[in-house]
Length: 317
View 1 (cartoon, rainbow, N blue to C red):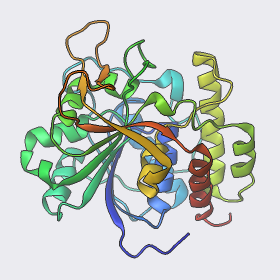
View 2 (view 1 turned 90 degrees about the vertical axis):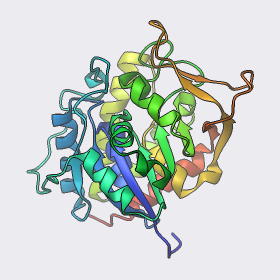
View 3 (view 1 turned 90 degrees about the horizontal axis):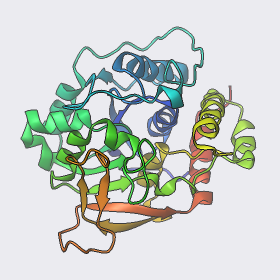
View 4 (view 1 turned 30 degrees about the vertical axis):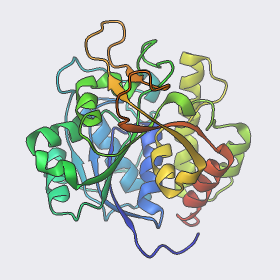
């Protein structure tokens, strides 16, 4: 990979989660990034388990130079939902890890987000791979952080079908009110939703390619994706599993492999059947200003090349 001289400062907010583990793996090692902090929220599982999972991944991979902070234990308003049916009882593919060596930062994730953004030069990208509870609460507590955010790249939503209800995608459904706060904050947003479902599939050739890499990152990747694939087949009937959350990191590494469309996006909060849906005005019928770049397509071959090359940066076992 080319040497990066000016690193991109990012905050990674996640709810680990099988695919979140891969996002952490990429963000911590790729030379493009200056990873400021890993903030954790409830989502794929309860906060206690998602926090433990972030610490497990960082301990296993030797990521000891990035603070890990626990944040919101639930959504701002709605009743909590989790996705243990997808990610397993421990939220991370039921994988056994060695003893956790990374110590949790004592600060609340929301407080830390506020501190980092207020002290920044307005150059930080906020990457969210789970429900948006932490960032939304930070914006409510300290609105001065909003203009400090360079852009928000998030995994969530759909301009087509949902995956937790017929209308809604899980991350948006898990905290729709938080999503509403984010999509109305006025900062640049890149929304990577379920349109990538059939674009980044963990096919046999991909499994063999990454499985041949002799390092701990590749081993962890293979384990979480094996479990994730079985879960997706059991629940959705997919023979091969899509990979969602790392797409936010890959987008920042090379946005040219993604196709996006500017749209006006609203979060449905009032409908019982469509609660949490991202209503994306694909054709501009509402004549409202666009507030998000919505990913509609990507180059899957180049996507997997970036995953492969970044995992190899961890060196040999």
